[in-house]
Image (tube, rainbow, N blue to C red; front, side, top):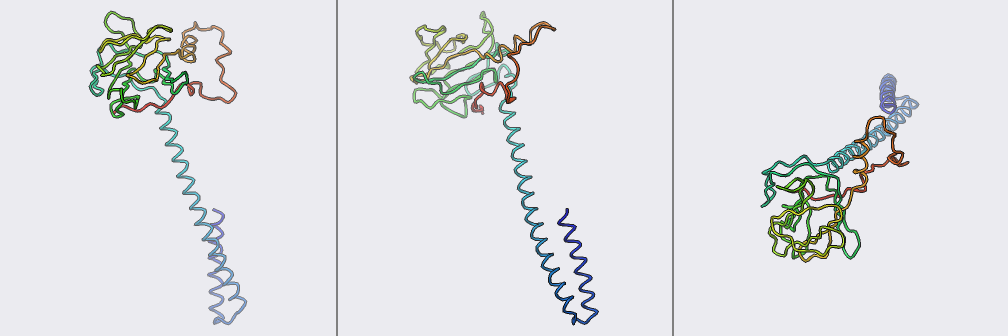
Length: 258
């Protein structure tokens, strides 16, 4: 605004000088010098205004890009809506017994080294396999089928509600251990097996092992939220000094199923 006002004043001054020079039939050298200086000043101000407008445009674009990235990150972190029974996810049809979801983490490791952590509370059903277009979590091992297994939350007929692992008739099978230290056995196709904390499974001949672990943060928050009104607050629930998101460590990106 200051530069625009300066330009307007300079242009007004130029007009006055031009009129004075015209009245003197162009013979006033002093007026000619002042007019030339004014022209230079107007040119410099216009250049600065263009540069500032360019910087402003870049700043607006950067702010918009940051806003869009923040919105995309918020959507990525937000839990997916409930999946309706009968929904087709590739060849898998979501059963009628799908329901709810409980806090849990699925950790993938190889040779004892953690590679990936999946927040199961973000969805109520996950398809794991080799084909990205049909799966939420992809594995590139040759022994993994296009759609190999499903992790789904609900209560199959005659069973308690919780997370379950279902083999989709894969060629190389799925090994599962329902308890820590228990030897893995081959999962029967279309036979939901519970994935309680401590359960592990292996897909095909891949050396990657998946283990179900407690989501301590959410589990504790759920217990605290269920506490009677007036109960003393747990000081351990206080946010860290940095004010960071206490869910951030539990979340990783998984591919969206098409």
